Structure formats: structure tokens, C-alpha cells
Amino acid sequence: MPPPGGRLGPGYLTDEELKNKPKVTSALLKRIFSYLKPYTKQLCFVLAAILCSAVMTLLPSVLTGRIIDEGLIAKNMRALVLYIVLSFGVTLLANLIGILESYLNTWIAQHITFDMRNSMYAHLQKMSQRFFTTNNQGDIITRMTSDISGVQQIITNTLTSIISNAITLTVALVLMFRENWKLALVGIAVVPLFVIPTRSAGKRRWSITKESQACSDEINGILNETLSVSGQLLVKLFGMEQREYDRYEAVNRKMIGLNIKESMAGRWFRMALGTFTNIGPMLIYLVGGIIMMRFDDTVTVGQISVLVALLGKMYMPVNQLLNIQVDWIRSMAMFTRIFDYFDMKPEIENAPDAVTPESADGEVEFRNVRFYYDPEREILHDVSFKLKKGDCIAIVGPSGSGKSTLINLIPRLYDVIDGSVLFDGRDVRSLDLAFLRENIGIVSQETYLFNGTIRDNLLYAKPDATEDELIEACKQANIYEFIEKQETGLDTVVGNRGLKLSGGEKQRISIARILLKDPALMIFDEATSALDSISEQKIQDAIEPLIESRTSILIAHRLSTILAADEILVIKDGEIAERGTHQQLVGAGGVYTQLYETQFSKAAEPAKPDFDYSEGES
Ligand code: ATP
Image (cartoon, rainbow, N blue to C red):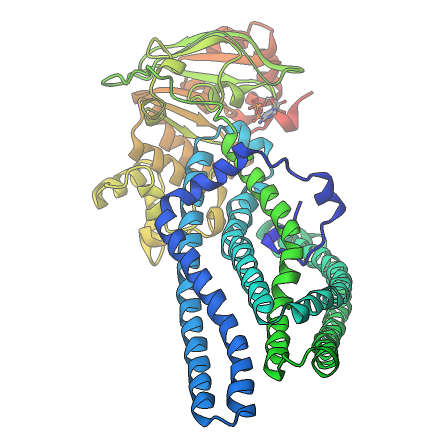
């Protein structure tokens, strides 16, 4: 893989890059060119501009010969001035065309990456929950940012460099041979002289660059880990400030050394370059001089100068073209990686004949549902139950028994492996996804708020909600009192992921958010983490009326919530172990009785915080 961040180094591939060399097929090339297709017109302009500027930048070299032979040696003032002015004009024009070319080039590259980013973002939005839980978040972001930026670099650098260098070289060679074929042959013989040393100088520099990139990745890693909100909290609580400082200082020091080395390698590189670019012309002067004085007196001083000037112009293109293979392989690898992402099929998609009913009651039925994340380990085995309109089911069970998994199947965050989940009597897989999700509201255990104001977070559920609606929802969710106390009210900033708020406050804001969404089915995944009893009471007061008035499912950890439900499902090891009302289950002597005795009865005592199965499991 190329170094992250689209940093294309000089012409050397890493061992890994060589090993993973992508297969360049015509299908791949076709696909790449399909991104260029909408910009064919602009690309033709770029091509024309490159051609013009390549020829024009070489013309002054040819004119140098005329200046010397026809102006200086012939002592012709008119010719001298004419060629100088011509030379100046051509250079100016070549540069102006160069500006136009780079503008067009950047424009095309930016538009292609714009198209690619948008379609990648839209594609990723369609990916299932499994994709996001399985893939490293950093990888996804890298794909979206630096890989796609790499594409821009390919278009502005690799592609144009191939074209413009090839043109420059061809034109330079033609001009050299036209001027004098013997001298041209000498010129070509000299080229390897300045290519070889610069390549080996570049190789050393590249190895240092790689080392310093690894070092910089390490520094970023430390910064990311220790300067994040949670990382810094951990550092503080474990008193690790000094240790982290030492770790940081050590890599930082290593980085300085590498930077100095790198900059010195650059110095040697420049020296080698300077020396050899000087030797080349000298050789042409020498050989050209010998030919002119001893063998062929038609060779002129001007011709020798033209050859020297053209040779100078050939140096860069030759070197760059030699490196092109590397850029090419990297570019192909980059495209392959991007296309790999594009080719991932969204696991959960709308059925082609998906139905969108007029309205929803929120009824749910599980019919012999089986589910696993990983075939090796089945999480839900043969789960069946039915939730009727207006009813409320409480799901209880030990931590890890599959409660959250079960509810994730309703809005199709995952699809069942066997059996079916029905929403209002229809298999969820036959319903329109947007309709399904619109009618289900989930207050999850881990409340997620976007960085922004409370208002922004509420409007996420209903962008056109009026101020009164917002306030009403907050009142119902028992959070309005808190909001009123804030200086900026609804415009209070919640901080990164809502971290400026307490767990209870976040929960109540997310309840208000669901109230605004007003779904037919409400799912409440009660937090297992301890909230103080006042906070808990406030949440309880907010959700109780909701349970009364809506079809709802509660993953319950508190007795008061359980008592409010019409039916209790006790899940153990992915199966419904028991079901019934509290009264029926409490004396039955089964799993529920055991849970009640160890957990609920304690939680029922006043002013005690909530219980958590994970803490109390025996
Ligand atoms: P808790 O009360 O602690 O939230 P739970 O009953 O809701 O637990 P689930 O979250 O449904 O339990 O998890 C059931 C099992 O599935 C657990 O053993 C868990 O490790 C596993 N699991 C959950 N999510 C995933 C996932 N995305 N990929 C693989 N396994 C998972």
C-alpha cells in the first residue's frame, strides 16, 4: 500500500507495494476512464494546451542557435533583436498557456474527486450496520479522504506528466536531429550520465522519508490517543501524564534527527544534480568542438548551443518518465482500493417491489427468528412473540443474552437468518426501508448526540418543528426544566458527542427527539449504567406516559419499567425462557424469580440506584 495521505514518494516501491501490485485489466482502465468521460471536452483542451506549451518552451532553445549564429557571429543587429524578442514572446506565451493548462487540470481533477466523493458517501450511507461495526473507522475515513485525494494527484500529476513529458521528449529529439544528427547522438549518449546518479540519490532520500513517515504516524497515534476526550480522561485518572510526555518526547526527538538527515540528503541530491547537469553540456561542447574543428566545419557554434540547451530541457522529462511506472502502479492500486469499496454490496436494501403502506400501527411479530452475526455462534434461536397495537412488551434477561440484537432486527439494522420479523403483519424485508425506519423510534442505551446545539439535535428528528413543538417535546421528556436553566436555552451547545451533558440529560434529550419523530413503534433500550435516583425518576416519568399511549418495546433493567409493561419476555441465551406478567412470573420459580430476587427486589427499595444484571449476575 502506498504511504497514507496520498504522499507519493519518489520512484521506489516498497516491498509491500510490489507484492500487492494490482492487476491492470482493460475493465479497470475502462472504469477509470469512465470518470474522465464527462470531462472529455475539457481534457481535449488540456491536451492541446500541453502540446502547445511543450513545443513553445523548447523553441527558445532553438532560437538561441539563431541568436548566436545569425545575430552575434554574423554581427547582424536586426536578426539579434528579432530572435531575442521572438524568444521572449514565445516564453511568455508558453507560460500563459501553462497557467491555463494547470487551471483546467485542477478544475477537472477537483470535479472528478467531487463526483467520486459524493458517490462514495452515498454508497457508504447504504452500507449496513455490520459494515460499520466490522470495518475500522479510520480505514473508512482514509478511503473517503486521502485515497480519493490521491486520485486528484494522479490526474493533475501522473497523467499530465506522462503526456507532457512524452511530448517534450519527442519534440526535443526531433529538434536535436533536425539541428545536427551527429551532435544529437552525442546528446543521447550523455543522458544516462545524469539520470543514474540522481536516481540513487533519490533512493536514499526515499528511505529516510519512509522512516520519517512511520515516525510521524507514531506521533499522530500518540496525539490521537492521548489528546482525545476519553484518552485524556484515562491519562489523568491513571496519573500517566509524565509517562505519556516521555513517550511523546522520545518520538518527537527521533523525528528531529530524521528531518535533519532528510534535509541533508536533499542537499547531497542537489549537489549531485548540479554536478551532473553541468558535466553533460561540457561533454557536448567538447565533442561538438572536436567535430567542428577537426571533421565537419558545417557544424556551427549556434548548433552546439542549441544542443546544450535542448539537452538541459530533456533532463527532467527523462527522469520523470523513468519514475512513471511507480506512480502508475500506485495509482492503479489506489483506484483498485477505491473500487473495492464501491463494489461492496449493501447488505440491506429495499426490495424491488417494496411496499409503502399509508399508515402504521407499530405491531410487531417475531416468527421463529434465528440470527447470528457469525455463523459459528448463533445469538437468537427460534424466537417468536407478538406485540399488538398499543401494547407494551418488556424484555429482560442477563447481559449478552441477545436483547439489543433482537430489537435491531425490527428496523432491519440486520436481517434475520431464518424465520421472519413482521411489522404490521408484513415481513420487514418487503416494506420500504424509509417507511419502516420512519415508523420506529429507538432510544438506545448509548445516546448519540451530534456536536451542535440541543435545538440542532432535536430538529434532526423533525426539521420543520416549531418552537412550541420543541418545547412541548422537551417538557414531556422532562428535560425542559434543565434547558430553561441554561443561559442559551435550546441553543446550548452539547459538545463533542454530547459530552457536555450528563448521561441522564442526554437520555432525556434523546427521548424528546423521539417524541418529535412521533413513531408508531417506540423502542427504549434502558441504560444499564447507574443514574442517580432523581435522574432515573425523571426518565421514568418521561417514558411512562409514552408506554401508555404507544406500541412499545422496552429493554428493561428497572422494576418500575417492568411493572408498566403488558407482557414480560425473559430472554436467556438467545431464547425466550419465560413470558407473562410480573405476577405470573415472580412466583414461578424460574429465571425471572431468580432475577427478581437478586436484582429487582433490591431495585424496588426506595432511593437505591438502578440495578444492572451485568454486575449482579450470579
Ligand atoms: P446488554 O444487556 O449488555 O446490552 P444484550 O442482551 O442486549 O446485552 P446483545 O447486545 O444483543 O446483548 O449481544 C448479544 C451477543 O451478541 C453478545 O454476546 C455480543 O457479544 C454479541 N454481539 C453483539 N453485537 C455484535 C456485533 N455487532 N458483532 C458480533 N457480535 C455481536
